[in-house]
Image 1: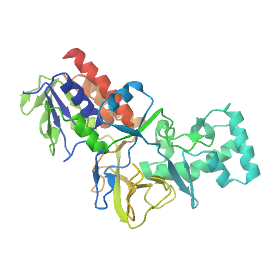
Image 2: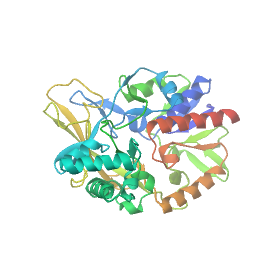
Image 3: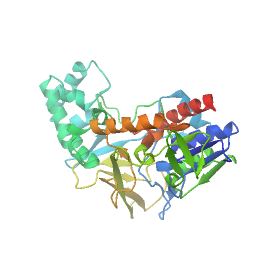
Image 4: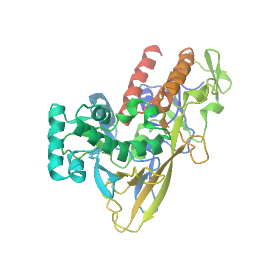
Length: 384
């Protein structure tokens, strides 16, 4: 073995660990199944001259100082405040929902009463979850919560996850809050950023160290076998750390069954207009089949005249012809129990480090992935 560490996956988690390892003089091998680096953050220039993100829209946001310090030491970043909308009953309304939503869908006198009730009931809190609203003992607040749930959360969830909201882990419904003021921004984080030149360029900078080798178009599962407590890599016992960021059930050849994921299909379209929709991202909970449309010249903002590129997003079943990529882990009681059993297997394997959105079976934001990578790297560093 000519390397000091082997990493499966060239997304954020794997790349950060590779970067940190190479900075300390370690020889790194990254094995990547796709034909490109950068994982789901991969972007490129399309036929219209617009930078598009192949696997859906991403903008970086964090409150974590360690994560912020790490990413800003690599390349240049600029502030980007993401704004999004939801199309309900033919109107664009802010996402997350805010007091403008109430003004749009309630008569003025009732809207004022409702806004005041929300401020008083939640002690001037800036935001709450729809779950909290649904559980309120205030009838008017529950009415508003049910309106949002039936017009957005229920139909969107049914399409996005392919199951009823009641079956999902409650954390999913809590991801997008309801605002109790007029704040119009998708995130509240202290740092909201985009990388100069795009995400692929940022990854190229992280991977530019000559100590890092990358094998693209290479499925690590063709090279790796778990033999008892050991890892066999290319028919030899692996004596260096092995970082695995793929689905854990695949590594163990589905011993306990397949973990459930949701996949996506993107219909990329170029339109001869300056602007297609109000913001870069618009959710369409009431539309047939698709959940969201992204207009890429607005994320990041790009000065392209007379053309725009959109991606219409269709959730599909993972493992089908259309759904080849595992995007989102479907968190239910059964799936969490199955994942726990796989973790118990992984914990017994020497030199195996499991992390990343797929490996950890978690709905990570990018800053979560970076922080997790930094933590795993420190664990490796203490041992090797």
